[in-house]
Length: 490
Image (cartoon, rainbow, N blue to C red; front, side, top):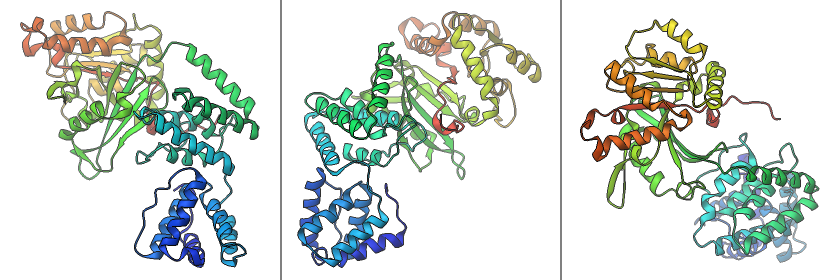
C-alpha cells in the first residue's frame, strides 16, 4: 500500500463513504467508480464484494494505492451531490488523513493517458521487460525492489509518485518517465518527453533534470555494457537445511539489479533447474535483455560450492542441454557476501585483477596440506588474486580448508577440480586456462566445457577437466544489494 493508514483511520473512511446516499448501493458505486476512472485517465484494479461494507473497504484500499484517487472521488461526489454535508465530511476526512500529491490532477491524468497510449502502441509489450530496470535507476538502491505483482505501467507510476526526490531534487517519477521516453517508440516517446519537460519547469527542477540528462548522454557515449548477469542466490532455510530460499536478479553491467524471483517457499536443490529454465526461456526481462551476452552466477552457501551447477539442464523446444555449454556459469560465495570483515581485502584483490588481468598473480596448490592454513592465508594475503586447487573442498563444511582460507583471504577467483586431479596434469591444464586475460575466464571456462562434450574430446571422455571444473568468479564491484552495508546518503 502506498499511503498507509492505521486500520482505525481506514474504518473512519469506510464509515464516511457509507454515510453518503449515493455510495450505499453497489450499482451507484459502480457508476461513480466509472466516472472516477475517466477522471484519473486509467482503470482501477477494484474487485467487488457482495457485502457493502467489504466492498467499500476494498474501494478504500484502491484509493490509498493511487495518488490523487481519493481527492478525485471527493470532487466527483461534490459534482453529483452539491451542498451535501456527508460529502463535505468525507472531504474533510480525506484532507486530514491523505496528503495532497505533488502532481496536479490534469498532469496526472495526462501521464496515465500517455501510459495507456504506450501500452496500446507497444503491442509486443517490450516496455514490460524494461520498466523494472528503469524503476531501479530512478529510485536508487535505498528503496524497495519493484513488486513483481504489479500489473502495468499505471501501477509503477502510482508507486513512483509517492517516492520523494533524491539529492538532486528531481522526483523519481520524472526520471522514470524521461528514461521511458528514451526507450519508447513513436508516437508515445515525444509526448512523454514533452510531459516531462513541462512538469520539470512547473516544479522548478528543469536545470537539475537537464544536468542529469547531460550526464546520461555522456554515459551512453561510452561503450555499451558488455554483459548481462542472471544471479541465482540460494540461502539455506532455517528449518530445513536441505532446502533453499531462492532469489534471482537480472543485472545489466553494474546497474542496480531487478528482482525476478523472491519466493518464501524453500525449494529442494532438485527444483533449481526448473526455475532456471523458466527464467532463461520465458522471463521477459531476460529474453529482452539489452546485451546478447549473458553470464549465469550462482550465489551459494559453503556446502553447495562444489555442486556442479553448470550441469543443470534446461529444455528448449524439446531439446535439453546443460547451461554450462550455452552460458558462462560461475559460482559466488554467499558466506563472503555476508561477512563484511573481509570485503576490504576482497575489493582490493579484485581491483588488482581488473587492473592487470593478463598478469595477475596466481597461487597454485596441487596437494591438500601442501601449505599450513596460516601459511596459505599469509601467501594469499600478499598478492594473489587467483587460487587454483587440484582437489575439491572438504565434505565437512564447518571446518576450514584451503578453499575456505582462499575465500577469507579475499581471493576473488578460485578454480578447482571437483573430483581431484593428478597434480602434474592439473598444473598443466590450469596453466593453459589461466594463461590469458583473466577477466575472460568465465567465457574461456565455458569454451572448455564445450570442448569436453565435442567430438574432438572423445579421447578425454568423462575425464576432461571441463566436466569437473568449478569456477568461483566473485566480482567485488557487484555485490547484490541485500549484502551491501548501508551507507549514509551522499
